[in-house]
Length: 266
Image 1 (cartoon, rainbow, N blue to C red):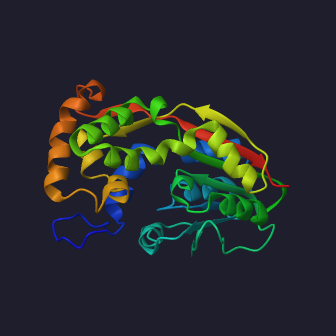
Image 2: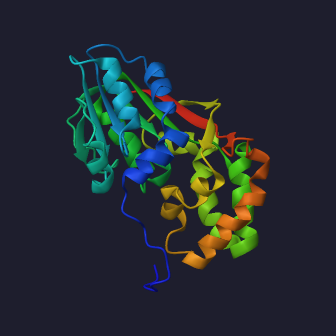
């Protein structure tokens, strides 16, 4: 990453992420994954790559005070925000490839929209199996492919037209794990036999400006690659490109399906 002062650095993860990006995309998925994993009162679960805790909090409300939920993330900034919430979740700093839990610690290992950013995914799948009791549930949700996500496809094409294929490809790689065969290969390399399903979903941003400039995910993917002037140009051009998904009230809403991996711990 360049040291140029005009480049946008990776920002500290803060309440802005939790207040805008989580409601726009992540919030609705927690209850769905928890229900699909058949979590019940008194059970134990871990949220791998928990971020600010949307999925972990949903799991905690399901298992109740007699159960136990851990949220694990490698980002101290994310965990700092998660710890501001009143909850029974135990927040732990750690990597998906080396979960800070003992063997057979949980009834279910869950992860939503984090596996795409894990460096060694087979190792992460092995770790999820290790900490899950034999026969326990494992659920991982990732973004579906770019072809299945027209709003982000339009955004990716805009990146390419403005800044070249390298920038477009950097953004598009986030969606590569949404190919069923890719997800199953990564899981098999981690010792898990799985099935994948496509779940419908949507992203809903208050404005197109929120989607582009106020969304920390773009800083994760593009921070250090685009300078401030380029981000300004991207924001201006996005108004027209994303117009088909803008509603009368100004919100920007488009399909955002997920590829969901399901397995049982061996």
